[in-house]
Image (cartoon, rainbow over all chains, first blue to last red):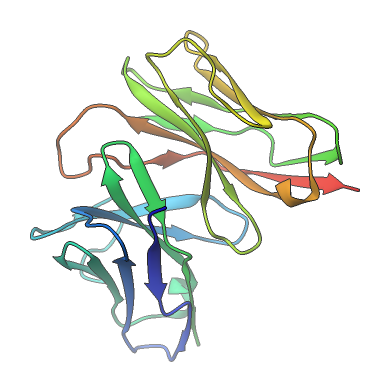
Amino acid sequence: GAVVSQHPSWVICKSGTSVKIECRSLDFQATTMFWYRQFPKQSLMLMATSNEGSKATYEQGVEKDKFLINHASLTLSTLTVTSAHPEDSSFYICSARLAADTQYFGPGTRLTVL
Amino acid sequence: AQTVTQSQPEMSVQEAETVTLSCTYDTSESDYYLFWYKQPPSRQMILVIRQEAYKQQNATENRFSVNFQKAAKSFSLKISDSQLGDAAMYFCAYRSAHAGGTSYGKLTFGQGTILTVHP
């Protein structure tokens, strides 16, 4: 089956620093990837849709200058949390769309901001 | 905008028994997809089952089946012969079938139901 990886799986950073999370589709090309945020025991909230070669589409309420998304190739999308603060601590999950109705999820990245 | 509601924050079942998780949704569209995802403690999202709205027949995947009531906008998941490995958080999700647009294919998730399986 299709595999999506995320790196790192866990990151701790100091407040005010920036953190980059990578999402890769390992055995397929994905023109569209999605970034979600999940707090403990809560649902996945879509942050943005990442389209290869174009600007990301952000959901309402998501700060595009704080959560920078780059989809530079058909197998890689990155999420950069700029000037991270403790309230940005969360579990970030990406998914990649293989076909019209098939979406595969990465294993997630746990971000802790001290 | 579409919304998905799971009214059961937690459910429990005895091993080998059957449990049903509820999901309702709201949409003005006639063509769409519905999904149930499982998120075990590892937090890896796993697709359990999917249903196309245009299909009247309820989807089935081994011990997992759905009861899709389009008019009532209800989409429940039945797990038969529950196993310890079924313990997880379950999410109901909606996706529009309309092609195009920069957010094509995005999923809208319900709040989730934590399922506990007792031995």
